[in-house]
Image (cartoon, rainbow, N blue to C red):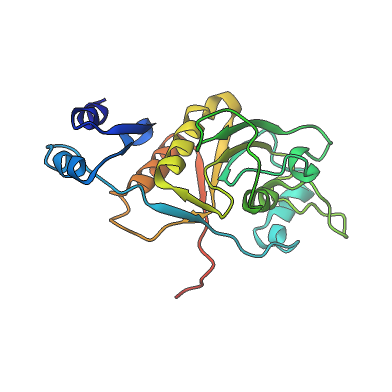
Length: 231
């Protein structure tokens, strides 16, 4: 409320309410930015671009993380719900849309860009790729599931567009929504396969603060390590 009042006081236009980090996103002129910077107790961060990140996927993924041993014991991920914050999903792709018993598994879809509960079409394919790694119910040639948790439930949150690009404000709004729906959909895991160059200490950045808030809320936060290697 304090941040919103300060933005309105200088004539700025609020675009996002980001309660998870006690913040708002707003459109501001350079003059309005400078007036806000002079306001005690406020921090300003640019609404920086964020990029989705992906790599190769194959049937080696499940044994590499030891999930094959759980599958052998009949542990396939139910009733946990995984929230995938990405580019959306191909709703017609059966291994994502249905669990190992052929039952619908998508609990909800939220578009953080439009701030609406609606079908979030995947224009890029990245979100579908990531969700498949997490919970594809497809079998490989040896009869083994390709997904790590092939019977888990799914919540799809879209914060990235056709080219895999997004903004701080939309990503944080997506995380905020996921935390707010944790109990409603039994969201236990939140996957975010995206990256952005470091612009501050990790404890100070708006995106980092939102991710840490999700962890404090009891959600396991999964983040991509990047595809560029140790350098």
